[in-house]
Length: 385
Image (cartoon, rainbow, N blue to C red; front, side):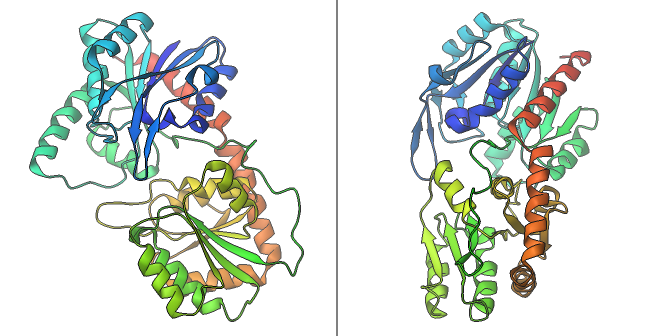
């Protein structure tokens, strides 16, 4: 089976491990992963690099110039170069990880038809809420969505709510609930050493510092417990428009010596933070135009055998399941009580941390994600392109 995968996600080398794992596990499969030459992010522009180094005999990474880089909905590839790639590769499956309404998916389906390649097309979507668009964008997404849906043989939804939204309008479309990325267990793994009992203890958050991530709930809860548990500290890793409000609150509570702020770091550095963490918290909120789509940092913490606490927002409860503690979103008292219980019961922390590690190994490694993805593609062989 020859599969063309299209996504900006794999401009990041660490994310390519998923396809390398699939290629190693299924040597008869041939994968080509297409990414933009350049991608604009919130913080900086990313250039594609290391493609030849990361390629295997049956898994190659290739980049092409794009228009509207940084816009997941509207970006698309240089048409003539994309046509040349499609015609030379002639895939059996085209899998686009940009959502149902993406112009890049529209481009792939359209050229697949024009060139008569006959590949079955599938897509990945995270969308677990109904976004509100202006009239122009709504019209474009309706056109792209209708065309793309008719040309789709299946879809992978990154969370349960995304699947519900798909099946509400595309009931006959085969779907699978599966996160886009798994965990590199060679990188994210438990710390080798155990901290002394009287050593500093850390509650950690990693992610965007924006209001919908619920950080005010976290700092309110920490402020309540700070004077009770003097060797516990809070670490916040990330940046965003809500930084000033968080810092101002911490200063007002005279907690600057107990709260550490760090700018965004690489995956390798995230591992260091995770391995020194005792409790990881993801306190997200459901808002009108966003819900937590998965919370990959949760499984990163779990893979490091760290006890996790999450709000009941979005997909968090499904990711954590019984391997952590769930509290009511926005409720700082509930979070304070949950943290207090875990602080005073180290055996419970340890038990949940081990459950989290076991859950990652069973559900969220690159190997598991790759196997389920490949099996899903095989199931599309009985559908009509």
